[in-house]
Image (tube, rainbow, N blue to C red):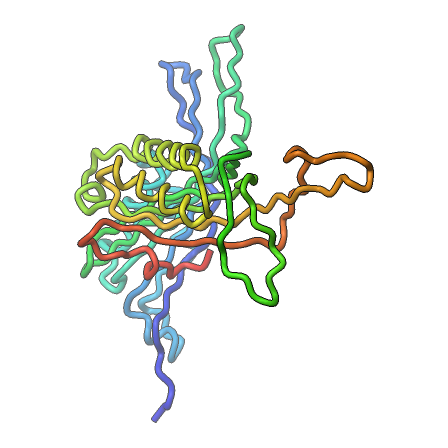
Length: 306
C-alpha cells in the first residue's frame, strides 16, 4: 500500500492573453472600445486517476480551456473582468460533472483613447501607464460564487504630511527618526465583494472598481501619516465605509523609501528637497480589514500561482 497521499491539486491554462475589440457607432462600427486581458483558468475536481495512473478520462485539456476563453470573448463579449470571469467559472463547473470548482483570475491592461478631432473614426489608443486591474472568481458547486476584485502597480506618493518616530531602538538600530518625510508606495489591493453583489447579473463592476479606487486614493492623500500601517488601515476603512458591497480589503504596500541626499560636502543645505529613491531593499506592509461579523476569505483563496 502506498504511503503517500495525493492532496490539494488543480490544473488549467495560465495567462491567456486576449484583446477584444468592440466595434460600435452604427453600421460602420467606427467607434472602437478595447478590453485587454490576461486570463488564467484553474480547475479542481475528480482528478485522482489522472495523477495516479495517467487515466485522462476526466481530464478536460488545458488547450480546451484556452479555446473557451477566446470563444466566450466572441460569443458574450467582455463587459468587465469580473463579469467575464463569472461566465467562465460557471461554464466549467456546470458543463462537466467531474469539475467541482473553477477559479478564474484576470488582469486588465487599460488603454486611453487618443482623440482625433478631424475624423469620426475613433480607434487610436495609448497604453495607460497607471495600475493593472485584477479580478478573481471562484465558483464551486458546494460553496457557490466568490468574487475578488483588485488592482496592482498603482504608485502613489505624499511629498509631506508623513512622519515616523517613537519606534523600538536597540543596538542594531541606525534609522533616524523622521518628522517630515516622503511617503510613497506601490499599491496592490484586493477586495472581497458581498454575495448579493456577486450574484447580481446587473451589478456594475466597472463603477464599483472606480469607486473603490477613488476612496483608497482619497484616504491615502488625506491621512496625515505616522506610519504606513496607519495609512493602510485608513485606506481599507475608507473603502468599507463608502462601498457597502465590499466586505473585506487586503492591501500590500511596499515602502518606496526616499532618503535625503547629504549635500553638506558641497556646502549645500538640503532642506527636504533632494532625495535618493531606493528600489531595494524595502519595507513591506500588509494587512486585511474586514467588516465585523464577516469571515475573511482573501488569505485562503490563493490557489492559482501568479
